Length: 411
Ligand SMILES: [Fe+2]
Image (cartoon, rainbow, N blue to C red; front, side, top):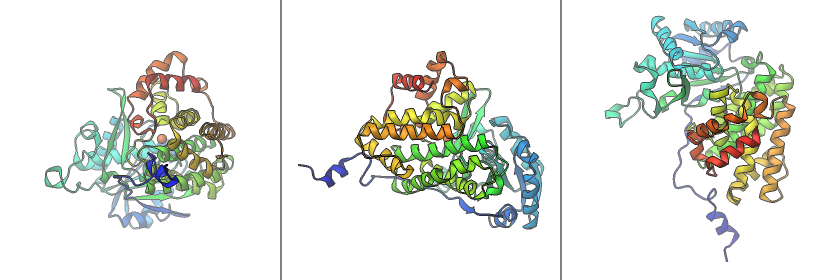
């Protein structure tokens, strides 16, 4: 007869893993008044002449003037401001950003913005340092290394990030995702030197963020934490980050959306977003993301909104994949204050209902049909989801029919 202990050891998602790697080389500083100290902090990373990368909306809020003042106050120079990043950045934007850095004789990048801005700066840094086009560097661990590619990766120019949304976590990740218009797909470049040298988390940078975007990006962070925690790539280091991210999200997301001047809640959401992405260091997360990527690609649904809509359905699907998976969701439920004592299905249902209630309270839509996804679009969405890199690390393997059913449930 199996003892309780040996039953635990036999579980797929407990015990001691044969291998895992936990990486986050970004120095994170969080607190108040850090924008004013941006130059002082960035000088410690070797930056001297900085290209500020941002978008026009953020520049229009006056935040960039304050960042520039903070840079010069620290004894550094602003080589220029590249504010031409669109909401969904693309390969041509990245090329122009790298060119701007060269023309203006910059030696470093300071990204001030959301995921698109930060990913643009990270990808532009690759071109600035190593040349070529972004598609030359597509994929994981493909940047030049010493010793015929076997040794230490060659360093990139110093890059700092000041996120203005609390969601993507790009400020502490080594991946950049950009659109390739010619190929109609998203390209990912990821390697160790792409971790930003420093991430500056200051609630002042999210002060002008509209409530609706605070809500959707916050749900993206929540999805990272939950998907990362239940992923087949789970590991104890990442677990600690994911659960703490969820604690912060459960206490601060609604506050940060309901009162845009609540600095404490907004600051805590910035910290939560950066913790939430750590479990997903590889960029692979789970099938909520697999479902949401094609919703964005084909129908322009905002990433966080698509995740919020799809998440409850994926929770129900995954929980039904076995007791070991359900136990991971029990942990998530416990942290979020959801009833976790019942059957596996009951835990999934309670957690899914909790997420649905939350997105309702945040004023987000709860159905894909509300955000422009038609029923006849399901086959192409299924195709995209099946081929998405996030699918392989999901704890339960979905079939085409499973994805179709999930989309129908979310419609
Ligand atoms: Fe995401």
